[in-house]
Amino acid sequence: MARKATILVVDDEPHVLRLVRANLESSGYKVLTAADGDEGIQAVECELPDLVILDVMLPRMDGYAVCQRIREISTVPVIMLTARSAQVDLVHGFEVGADDYLTKPFDVTELLMRVQAVLRRSKWPEEVMTRQGFKAGPIELDFAQHRVAVNGDPVKLTPTEYRLLVYLATNANRVIVHRELLRAVWGPEYGEETEYLRVYVRYLRQKLEPDPSNPIYLLTQPGAGYMLYQPEEDK
View 1 (cartoon, rainbow, N blue to C red):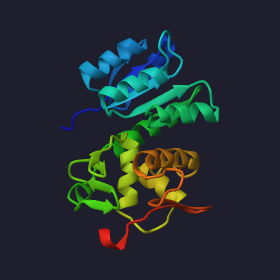
View 2: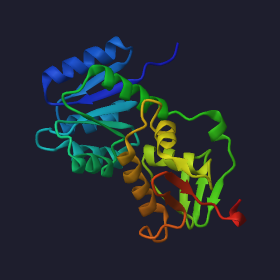
View 3: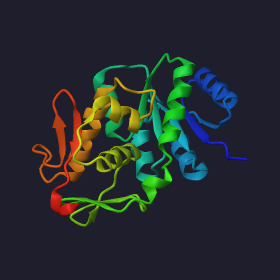
View 4: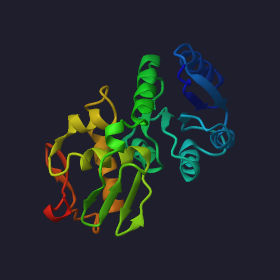
C-alpha cells in the first residue's frame, strides 16, 4: 500500500485548522498541525512532511519569515494562505520560496486541487531522471542528481524553479506558450496565472544569467511565451 502523504498545516486560527484537517484527512492525507511559526519550523525539521500549508498572518513571526526559514532547511513544497490578494503579497510569497498561493476565504475544493497539483509536481517521471545532462553556455543541469551549476558553481533552486528550468531545458530552442508552461510545471488545473511565470522566470534569470537584465539564454517571446536558448556547440 502506498504511503499517505503527510501535510503540515500552520495556522493560528483553530477553526481553519479544524476545517483544513478534516478535509485533508477525508481525502486520505496524514495531517500535522502547528499554531505558530516556531512550531511549524520544528515540525518541518522533525516530521519531514511532504507539503506545508502556511498562513501568512501568524503571531510573532509571519508566514513569509517562516517560509524563508523553512527554505534554509528543506525543499518541501509550501502553499501559502493569505487574506490579502494584492499582487505585492503574491510576489513576496514567491520570493521567499512558496510554491503556490491561496487567498482566504478559500473554497475547500480549490484547496484540495492545489494540494494534489503541488504533490504531483514534486515527483519526477523516470524519463526525466535518466536524461543526459544539459548545457547552455555556463548553465549545466544534471537531471539524475537534480543539480544545477553556473560556471561550475552549484546553484540552489526552489522545487518550482527547478521544475520550470527542467521543462525549458527539455524543450530547448522552442518557444513554449504561457498556457503550456503553466500546465506542464504547475499542473493541468492552471493556465491563466501568467504572473507565476513572470516571477519565476525573473528568479531563474537572477540565478543563471550572466546579466539578468539582458538575458541571452532565458528568452521572452512577447505575448507568447518563453524559450531556453541552447547554442549549437552545447548540444
